[in-house]
Image (cartoon, rainbow, N blue to C red; front, side, top):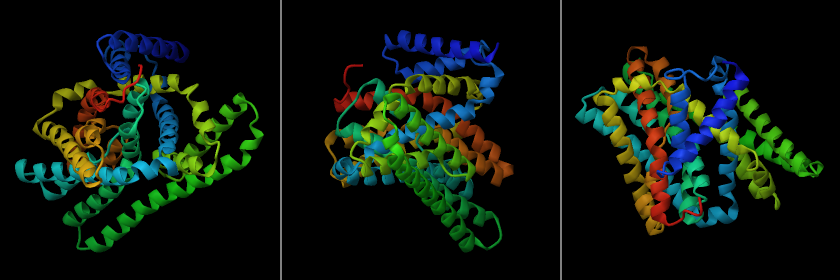
Length: 392
């Protein structure tokens, strides 16, 4: 199985799965992931090892493009309408998942305090890619859709802050009595991480806008836009910054400093569909479905109470921000997917606590499979109940 043949199989089987499963109302994202599992090394083994090894590269590129598009939702005009709702809901849904999982692990499962804190912190993360893909597939538009996209765009920032705080407290609980200094150092590191992503994204946005007059044709504009996005992704990786946050800030600053910035976002939509398809099929191919057999009581409780925390927190945030009725009732259903950031911080926890890190990472990896499969259904349900689905 060579690389080119694998790419052809990925594109054709991914499209076939989406078309077939669309007949029974399956979101395309779930169809791509299921096809990835089928053609991956676990079952049919039709994906070359070289492509599987390059999954990290493809993921960074696609997540950068997705994050760039999410930044468009933070235009001054749009944010003046939904900004209050986005801030309230994003803070409370992330905190809700954190506290819900934390208390269940501590009081029901009788887990150590530091382990409960870490599981709760990881629960706050939401994966934006699946949500964005379902929104696009459904051609959804409206206040509910804009609020949902705004919430998933900044969710990772809250996750990083919550995890930094929880990690510092957890290390202080089992380490020497330097908790206050450790907490301060880790929190400052997290804030610098977010601040660095903002400065990088904003700087690239200014450069992109200044030199955009040289992109005279649509072809030039496409190459130019992709070049700057890849440039931002590469620098973010070099300095160990978040690719997602960097490109969200890039898109957000760009949409607010240029009157014709919409053309950068529109031109990407002409080429991004194959990238999304490859991303989700490879995500399925990389899933180790044998882990599902290891889903014990800890995994089941984590899976259920993270969803309960997300639903309750989003509803409470919608109530406090006086959001429209559909946002209060259904927005939490669009926040179920969990993947990249959660796995990333789980790896950090595994490295910091080797004696129990395996439990953390195995649980998160296992529940990720289920979240990524059922999450798109939750998003589609929410958009349907909000009455914002267009012609698919």
